[in-house]
Length: 120
Image: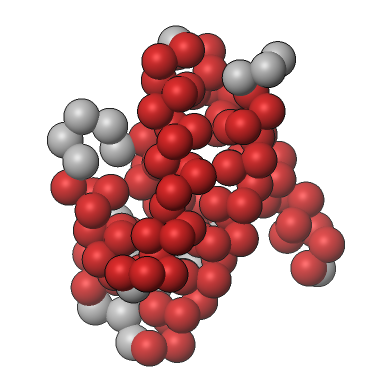
């Protein structure tokens, strides 16, 4: 099951980065920069604050939407009708940690594909 989850995570990340790269080179460059720095932002500021930062970005919420979509697809959000930020604000500690670790795992793939997309 873990191998299947990892494969699905990689496939999802590839598809999301491919969509961003089809928009424009500038969109991909901004996405790549954020995908590179976001794991460190989570580890230094905490998951909740880092997600709140993405949520508040008025110009570009693409990375936030990708994370939210993935977590919804994996049925990791306790209240499926609500978004990631709302779920996170009401999450218990074990759910919070699960969301954090899954987001970091997804970000590894998003970052790798975003770095490679510029050279394709």
